[in-house]
Figure 1 (tube, rainbow, N blue to C red):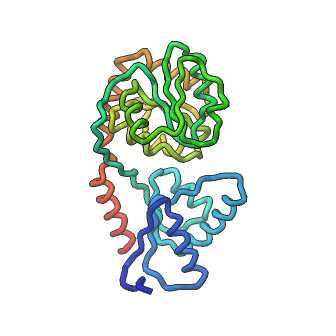
Figure 2 (cartoon, helix red, strand yellow):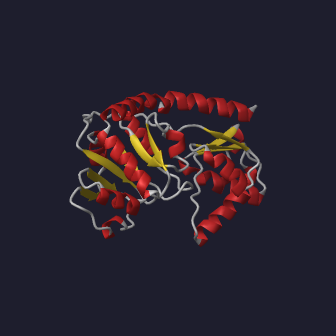
Length: 276
């Protein structure tokens, strides 16, 4: 009832609250201020729930004036998948850390994250690189990693706290982030956190990785599911200290791209364009 006091509504938190509001506006033909959704994420899945969410999203987006994404590949994806005709902009995700964790270059490689990680391919690689130590933090709750037999050079941790995760990353030699395929979203936070601690990243090319990791600058990119290529890049960074130092220094420099100051400046420009 107070909506007429505002020029626009900006919805955050993966955007679905904005979709629900736009759905109500569409269903009941309600007059509304402009609708802007930040960080709309609809992960492709072969489930009825995803089918239903996709239909609701496509219907609701007709009333959305602007969508802001943190992954540039979603611009074309949403235009094609949802036939979205409104304005859509890419702004890099922002995260400013103030962490006193001591940064070290340890003797192990770190990997961690949630359900979209390609643990089977990484574990196969660890079996071939038996002289390289790995610490893997599984936050997926899928149980996949627990079913994969690991060699003595691998330590797997489950349900670790944010503090322990951060400390293990900060004290690692470098970071590996494996994904199943290009369309799998995710990894933004660990990419930004790795940059904060000056850690080079070896990552599979998904939509997020190609935005946040510049191949040969602050990390190395490999084809998703390519066991041989992943092994080659990990082995290379494990042995080539000069290259590792270069990528790590560049990673630290790239962290400034994720400042909240840059984000708010970019967001203001987008809102100005939408309102005008």
